[in-house]
Figure (tube, rainbow, N blue to C red):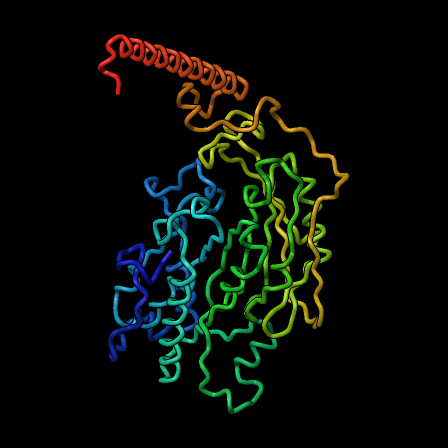
Amino acid sequence: MPSPSQSPTPTSPTLHPPPFTTCTPQETSPLFTVLPPEIRHEIFSYALSSYEDPDPAHAYARETYWRRPGHSAPRRTDTALLRTCKQAYLETWFMPFALAEHTIYLTAVDRAPPLGPRGGRISVPALKTALSVIHRAHFHSTSMGTGTGTGTAQGTDDESKNEAEGENDDDDDEGMPIDIETGPVRIFAQLWILQPGSALSRVLSLEHFAPRLVTLTIRYTDFWHWEDNRPLFVHAEWVRMVVFPASVTTFVIEFESLERRREEVDIVAGQAVEKWVFRRRDGKTLKARGGDETTVQRWSGSSMFGGRRWVRDETRPGVLDYYVLSVPWRVSNDQEQRLVSPDIRVPDDFVQPPVPFQGGVSLTKLDMRMAGVTVDTPAQEAVDLVREARSHRSAMRARTRSIGRAWRMEGIMRGRGRGSDLI
C-alpha cells in the first residue's frame, strides 16, 4: 500500500503534490485532447488500482494470525504511469493512495503484519498525514481552476451529491475545500481494543477521511476467551460511541469463528442485525436488514499461530475450517435521537458441539520441535510424542538434579575430611 513515510520505489511512492507550476499541454496526445477528464479518470483508476503482490518472497507466512483470503500478501500499485509526463502526474499523483484499500489493525503487535508497503498496512498517523497532504494540494488545484474533477464532498448519498454540485445555490459554499474520496477501508480489531470505542473513533474522526465502504473483521482469535472455547459475546460500547463520516454508505461487519461454531456466529450476527444502529456525522443512521443481504464465506487455514498448534480445533492435521458471516449496514434516512444498541451474546443455555479433538488443546512450537513433530503429524500422534518427549526431559532433569546433589554431597564430605579447607 502506498505510504507517505516510505522512500520512492515503484511499489511504494511517496505522496508528493506536483512540484512544478507548468507542464506541456500535450496537444498531440489523444489521451488528453480527445478523451474527456471523466474517461481519463476511469482509465487511470484502472491502471493505478492496487492488487496483492504476486511475488512469493513477499507472501505472508501461512502460520500467522493475519494470513487469510484476500490478505495473503501486501497490496502493491504499479506507478509507472506517474512517470510518463507532467500532465499525467498532475492528474494522477494522489490516486495510488486514494484508490488503495487501506488496512488498519487495532490489535496487539503480534496479531498484525509489519507497517508500511511490505507489511500491507498503514498506521493511523501516516493515514492522517496523507489525507492532509491530498486535501491541501487538491484544494489549491481546484481553487486555481486546475482540478481534475475527481474530488467528492463528504456526503455521497443523493442529498450530499446535490449539495456538492451546488444545487443548494448557497454562494457561501463557493470555493470551499472538498475531500478526495478514499478507497475502501478494512479494519481488523481485537475486541479488547475495539469495545471501548476510542480506538475506532480515532480512525473514523480523521480529518478529510471520506471512504464510502468500511469493513470491520472480527476474527476467530479476536473474540474474548477464544483460547478457552467460551461462548461468543460482544460488548457494544463501541457501537454506541463511534460516529461514521458522512461519506460512508456501507459498513460491513464480518463475524468469524470455526465452522463447528457457525450457529453461534449466526446467533450473535442475528442479534446485531436486529439491535445495532450506527450513526453518521450528518445525523443519518446505518441500519442492517439481514436476510439476503448477508453473505457467508468459508475458508481453511493453518492451525499454527501464536507459536502454538491448536490441535483441539483441527478438522484434519494442521488445518482449521472457518465460517464467516458478513452483515452490511446501509444508509437510512431515519433520524434517531437515542440509539440503545445492547450487547450481543450466545444464550447461556446454548449447547456447543463437541470439539473435534478431545486429547488436548494446543502444543507449543518448542515442544513440537523437541518431539520431532510437524504440523502435518496427526493430532493424537503429535500429542503422544510430545508427552513422551516431555516425560523423557523430566526424567533427564531429575537424573541431572540427582547427580548434582550427589556431587555436592561428595564435595561436602571431602571438605569435612580436610577441615582446613572449610571457611
